[in-house]
Image (tube, rainbow, N blue to C red; front, side, top):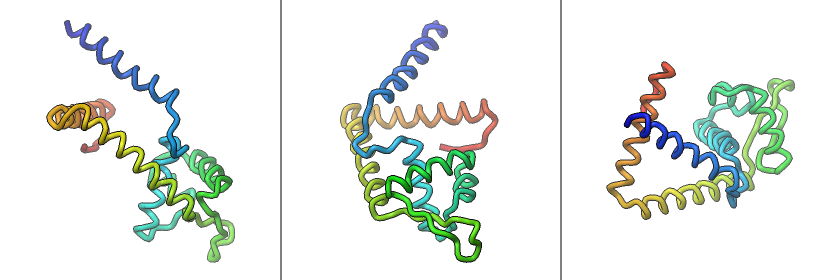
Length: 150
């Protein structure tokens, strides 16, 4: 019986991967782009320095990932890169008004999607889903020996 449940869970999880492949977001941002830009907004609001180094450290991702993403953001006009006046070898980053608008649009789109799911499932099932997702995350974090809370 447990083997059948495991198979059903595995099938259900694999369905989400298929959904992401064909879905086009109106915001044109990939989830990884959105995470990076959101982190930039958070750090900027906290008065922290925005650079490839500080972003890669804050997000615990590789510096080349951040650098490549920033390059694409600069080309798209959503991030501006200027030379740090105190250290001319470094670049300081800032999100442009176009970038801020894009992030807001993407957040609204994402929240509308979540609100639609809650409306579809109803409050009770939505709360149950949230609880199960948190439990799942905590279990997987424990298995991978990471300390995180949901």
